[in-house]
Image (cartoon, rainbow, N blue to C red; front, top):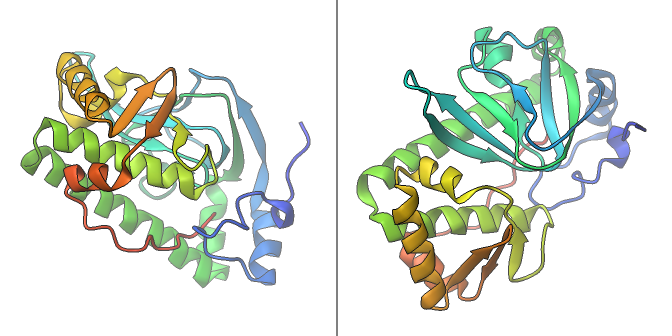
Length: 243
């Protein structure tokens, strides 16, 4: 597989990502150790492992999850193009959750041992890693608020709205639809709902003409109503760093 040079990265030109200056492009090209193509269903990172590699999602999507003592799975969130994977292992020494490819994926690969070089020599890039960590913490806080304060319909609306906006920001899909290759069970696990409850809620959103999720595609017919049901006061989406 031919490696994509950082200067030609298809994600860099997207409005959602903070632009690199020329020095950062040069550094990232040296920091990048290669690319990895994985098939759907591949476990990319395993909870408890000390992975020698960190990744940026170049193409494809993944599910982040924790395995509980009884073998059940709690979905934490979903990884999209531009997301950084493995930061926990890079900082804490071991992963606290697992990551599984939900589609075929291409990942930019970085050596974990080089993270400290980044902190020593590239303070702006080090700040970007801190920003990424802070955003993940904020998102988990929002998820806890969703589980505690939103009812089933509001939870599903919240998740679909967030996923739709994020996927549109990375130029996937069309104006009214995006690929959503996850299982309904994954969504139910992420939102603390039974599969039956999640299915009924999705059917209700379809009945109201708000959104429809079928055959791996999320179609949003009424984004304003979906946002209202999600109880989201949506500011303009902040640009985020790209590693």
